[in-house]
Length: 323
Image (cartoon, one colour):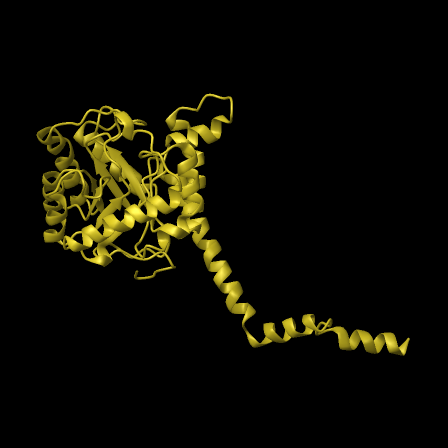
């Protein structure tokens, strides 16, 4: 992994010196948190530009809801929703990601100016996806996925969620590499909320270092998800609505940035943009402190502390002896 502030960088995309913020534009009537709000093309483009003005580094455009139980849209409808928005944002200089499981949508989005393909199935839903992305030389997000969120796939069963997700992601990355996508253009995503219960999501967040060990930049997409509602509700309470989980999302964004995430994907950008910048400032302060601690003067001071003295002890001992 090419390191930049320890979190890696993705070939073909800008090199940010901190965790990047990916804003979400859902061009759908039925997404779980904001379905229908940005369904019109002009409104969706304006929303994407607003997200950039609030601090988004790139914008993820999707035309198909992946919430549990959602009905898939047909190819023509997904293209109708997505391509004009991608083209409109790219023409304004926005770094655009396309959120799709269809190779045809990915291909036409890349032609319209998208810079990244974010496939929640990691190329499993459409066998043509990997060849299309490889031929285009585009970066590709490989998410942990166990199938469409319906029937028995909604609730995942795990003996050791971290080990199983890491192993399954590793296998998927190997398949993507074998399909011709370059290793420096692969991003991994633990797939929070996809065939996972709240305790699975929290355990994965607590062990992001294990996912980083896969050797690829990591995207964390926790925004407004069900597990945050469970945390906020407590044991007996009702989960708050999705749009009331943005403060919790920003908290996860700060923690993910601290754990080395390359980017976080969020619906409400401003708070997360602030959170990742604070996390970066703390990284810089820590690095500066480590550098200061290795300086000759600091080493002398440390040596004095180890022997039970400080640099001012000599004068103080002399005064004691004079008394």
